[in-house]
Image (cartoon, rainbow, N blue to C red; front, top):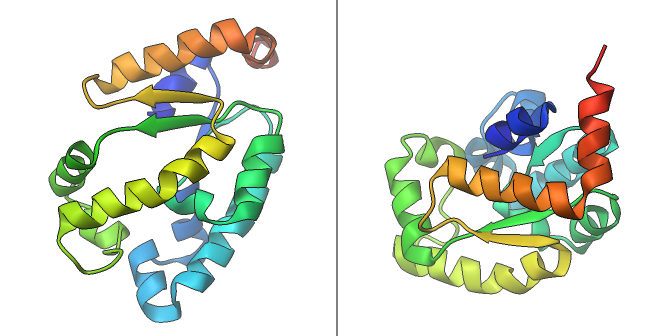
Amino acid sequence: MAAIVSQALEMPWRDADLVLENKLGCSIAQLIRDRGEDVFRDEESAVLVDLLAECNSVLATGGGVVLRKCNRDMLSRQGRPTVWLNASAPVVRNRLSLDPTTSQHRPALSGVDPLAEVTQTLLDRAPLYHECADFVVDTAESSAQQVADEIVAWLTTQWPAMVANSLRDLTP
């Protein structure tokens, strides 16, 4: 999604999970297996600090970035809009099952039934997402392009100076 939005806005984009994996030289799943979730969350927060310091980029974060208050605070006060891509548990579970890299990059959160796990995770995180989201997009029935178009339309009306500056900054 970030890639499509960034292309429309003519801005670079970064995926925090990929940056983290490149920095550490291992997958998130392996990091959690080898060093634990607390170490992963510490590293995730450090990467978020670095990426938020970069100017004019669209940032895709991992879904659990909101679990730490410091991360929610950073997202809320960064001066850039934060968009929550929302979908129902069955839709999220289906998307995860269709992604061949899920088991490599996303460890099971609890080891229980995958749909029950996704349902509980979404319930637990919803208030945290609401705390820092400026805009919520239901992605369940839309294509990636439709969701990106909705985000860009919202940004253009709600954050016109940011959009104009991103385009101007890239003009030689």
